[in-house]
Image 1 (cartoon, rainbow, N blue to C red):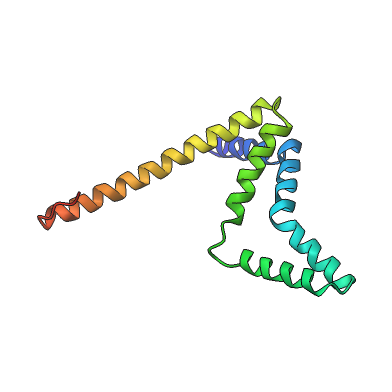
Image 2 (image 1 turned 90 degrees about the vertical axis):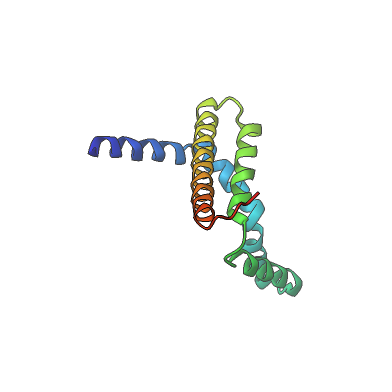
Amino acid sequence: MKDKLLKKIADIRKFLLNPHLVLCYAIAWIITNGWAYIGIGVGSYYDIEWLKNISVAYLAILWSPFCFELIATLIITIALMKHLFPQDKETLKRIQVYYRYYRLKVRASKRKKREKREERLAKLNIRHK
């Protein structure tokens, strides 16, 4: 059990610390977030109020609990991986495997919820489309 866990941790670490993936994630992060932090710094240093205000407002939205920024960053990261490093088949294959795994997990979860709901409705003798 311990060996299996250590192998899984090493596998995930190897995937996450891949230089191509790290570079693409850094570029994607600058596209989605980084410009706002840079804008605050530049706006404060050179007293550019409009730049500082826009950057702070965008960051306030990013720090809200319902922001999809991480999803957007990951999508941009994968797109950059495909365009900048198409020869890195191992990382792209691993991304595809993780995607399929979690997609199946989500579908199974939805199926279980639907079955439980149908059981509750059947007990109440109610049909739902």
